[in-house]
Length: 146
Image (cartoon, rainbow, N blue to C red; front, side):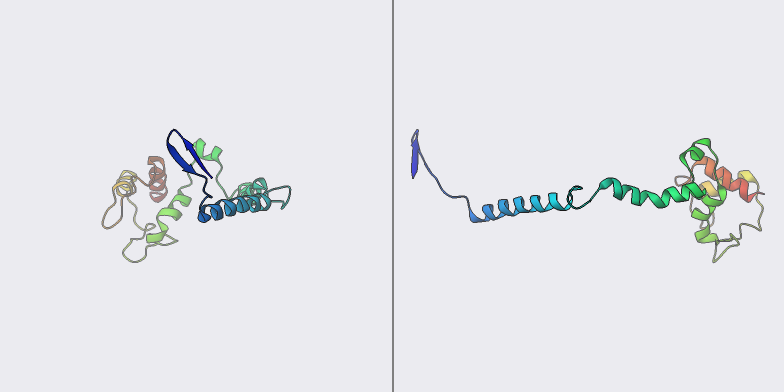
């Protein structure tokens, strides 16, 4: 059946088979997706997933093993934690040195010199200027100069 309007002839063709398969499979996927992720049908809940993921962090916070945002805001910096995260990989877990990294417990440098070394690096030690805040660098230097 053809239509003729303003001299343009249009045919009423069926849509291509590939398009029909795509649209029908999309509609089927939509139904299945809504069934699987519906909290009423399968019990799936984003809130439950969030609570399950947060439970270990809340337990650590309750035990005092996780630093709270309040402690961070107060400016209290645990130099031991920062050193364990940044220094222990080269200087060892006990900071007594390993490989070419020197013993941090034996040498006592002045606080200002330690700040300079940590900030700019020295003798193969990388600079930590962009990785640590000035307060963290000062806290590490103070810890090491004791």
